Image 1: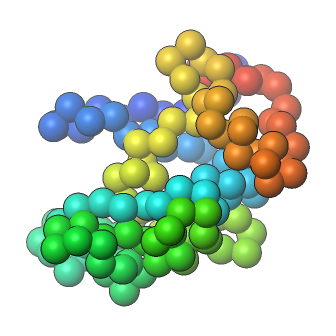
Image 2 (image 1 turned 135 degrees about the vertical axis):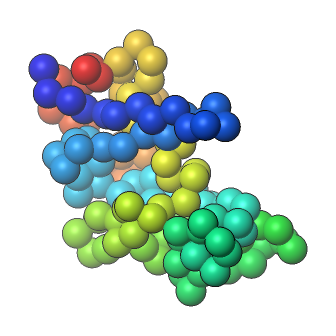
Image 3 (image 1 turned 90 degrees about the vertical axis):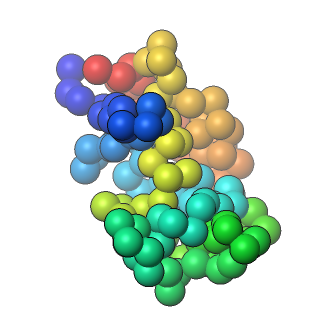
Amino acid sequence: MALLQTVIRTEDNRVFYDMPETSPCTDCGACCRHFRVSFYQGELDSFSGGLVPAAMTTPVTPFLVCMQGTEYGKGRCIALQPNNRCAIYENRPSPCREFAVYMEDGSLNPKCLELRARDGIGQPEPPLKAA
């Protein structure tokens, strides 16, 4: 079975996920049009070690920012391209890295399925299990 999701454990015990070039996320973008993507400002490229382009964010509090377009939820993230791919995938913020498409048992995330249905995006073709 092909690799469907890469699990990355960070030094501070967080879990991030990377998707291969072809995955249920390919050409979807439903989560990028639904969630407010807010995170600690230290992730911005204007801070040492930060990667997220500061020019693509809006301040939320003195310490938090969010991706432009997601300020109120149910918006469109500024990084979501017309082909529904992330323009800053390699530099995306932690909430995007922490959203698992596959659950621990290998099934698709129920929230992913709900958002796909809401947006009229078809359900992914099998296999529906993570490697």
